[in-house]
Length: 284
Ligand code: HEM
Image (cartoon, rainbow, N blue to C red; front, side, top):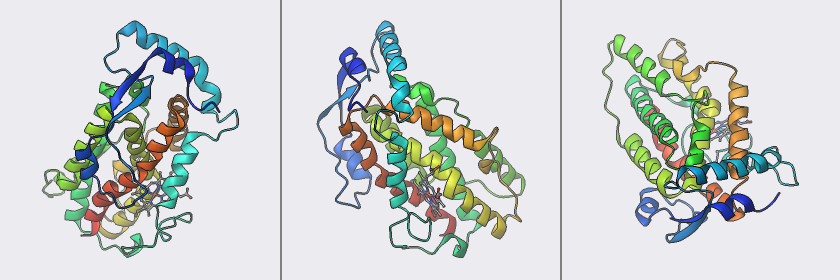
């Protein structure tokens, strides 16, 4: 696979600031492997303020060049496989077979969820999903538009679930720190660091369809009389929706340099830290 897309880079190579030091501080740098630096970095093909004709040129160049790379042809493996491999290693051994971390919390089947805690998790999750959806709808970086209406969106489903809880007599809390902190970090990244933003986009959506669903089932068994929330139901065939998003991620990343891809992968640990803070609310 070509290391970077020459066509789009030559059309619109601009300099964008890398994620700010304050954003780096906001995330927890739990590992020395995470290196968020400040200063300028080159972002091929990204030009939020570029005039329309120029955008069209990028789109046309991208459309002809992306397909083989998106399929993983040309020797390289599809980028989503790299993202998945990094994510799987960050699981604990009791969470997933490929996990490599030692567990620091009880396994999901020993969680003792409370309705209050679960509601806080759902409210914060809604804020995070709504933020992701708004960001791709706005598409301040033009290629974010690729990720509109994927069928994986969750904010409407969560809205219905929260209405159901309300009908059952529960008070719906306001979003709390884990959700608001993550949402503002995503907003900031989406403007300053598209590759890191995409890492979160991938992990949030895909985690929810894997471990997230498993957690939802266990919680429903323990405190919801097995009611299946809308949060865990998708219109259409989930595997197909996921496959479509994987292809788009591969396409988009086929325009990134190796440095940008590595930068995206390095963000995975933060994605786990932020999502972990949300999940922990279920049983605390
Ligand atoms: C208690 C917490 C969690 C559990 C029990 C869990 C469990 C799992 C399981 C069982 C899989 C499927 C493994 C397979 O395909 O063989 C998976 C996949 C995955 N998880 Fe988690 N996970 C948890 C938390 C997280 C978190 C916090 C993230 C990141 C924010 C995450 C990201 C992912 C990703 C990206 C995949 C790959 C999905 C795919 O390839 O379709 N997980 N997880």
